[in-house]
Image 1 (cartoon, one colour):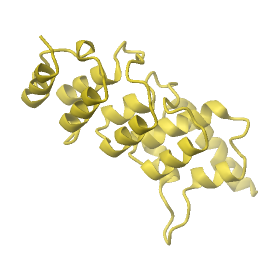
Image 2 (image 1 turned 180 degrees about the vertical axis):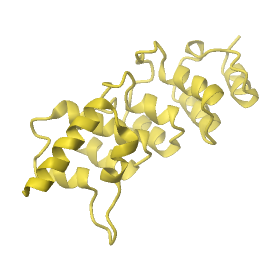
Image 3 (image 1 turned 120 degrees about the vertical axis):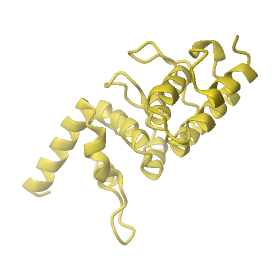
Length: 176
């Protein structure tokens, strides 16, 4: 491994710990011509073997950025579907916040817990509803619906949210 390679890896570790997820997105993107993302190559090289917390944050970063191929790879390697929560939110919280529908679906298939609370005291559904009201993304209504269908407790969401389609879903699932 070159000195430059090691410096990039160390920078990535620091970025994962700090939650620099937007900046780190290129590490989760497949290389031109079908090459594996850097994060996958580093896992294959064993570079995360003594960095389990950073690897958990890598799942949160992949979920934040909607990089489902990298997220699935990490899940298959045994990374907890909650991912890391060093930023105060775990992988599923970030996926719902950012409107990453496919990442949400992937994490739900891997049984990511729905009722874990973030540092803001919000569950995943609460985070999705708050995000739909304050940082809206096109997939938020579908994400809220799928979380409710997966068994998220409707009582953990702020109601009314002020977003008509979100409030209609919450009412349908029992909000009062």
